[in-house]
Amino acid sequence: MSKRALLRILRALSILSCAFLLQSCCLFSVRPPVYEPVTLANGLVLQDLVVPEIGAPIRNGDLVTIDYVMDLEDGTRVDSTLKNGRPIRFEVAGGQVPAGLDMGILGMKLFGSRRMILPPELGYGELGRPPRIPPDATLTLEVEVMKLEAANAEVDGLD
Image (cartoon, rainbow, N blue to C red; front, top):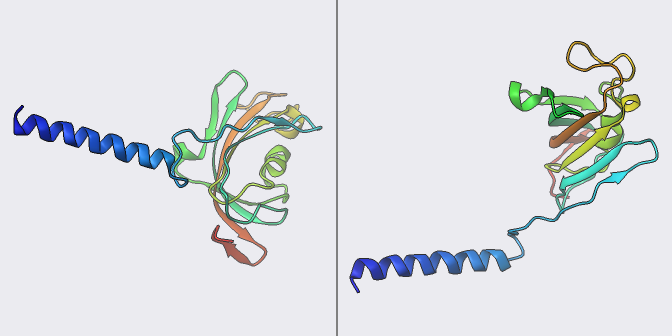
């Protein structure tokens, strides 16, 4: 066996052993947890996608900056901060966003992400938001919290 072939085999074994060690380490997970969707009494459906272990949960009155994508029930993308490169900032429960988003973001943490399915009455209702959002539309949002400002202090997620 040539020296070059032996080096290739050793390199492959080294990569495999590193992957095995990373998989078994508590800091790295090959398979992230899968969270089941939860349907609230008002019809709002929440499914966590990423739940940070540390940090303060979002509460009413906090200022949050989020990235999101918004789709209609048929999968048509109607809005995305990722597309325009500008996250939105709003006060939770301040009436600046659809009620379902205000409710659905409660309890999330900095850098967490969640899928929300908003029934029409918690989205844009019977009027919709023409031309992109028709009347009585059910909306699916995927939200990631980029910044969280609680009370008068910024939360860095290290609580």
